[in-house]
Image (cartoon, rainbow, N blue to C red):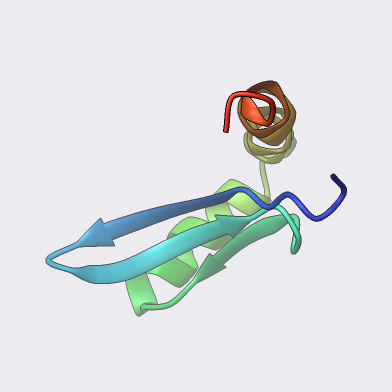
Length: 66
């Protein structure tokens, strides 16, 4: 069960701007704007802690259901 992965992606006009990957542990930007957003979110520990908690709250909770 250690290989569960949470991915939280943000899109605009079908273009992925930013993604949080629980295996990486931080936001990654894919456009100029996305890189700025990722840097901002990564600089705030509460954003990172919130995303990490989502893996435990959502993924681990639903593993028996799926």
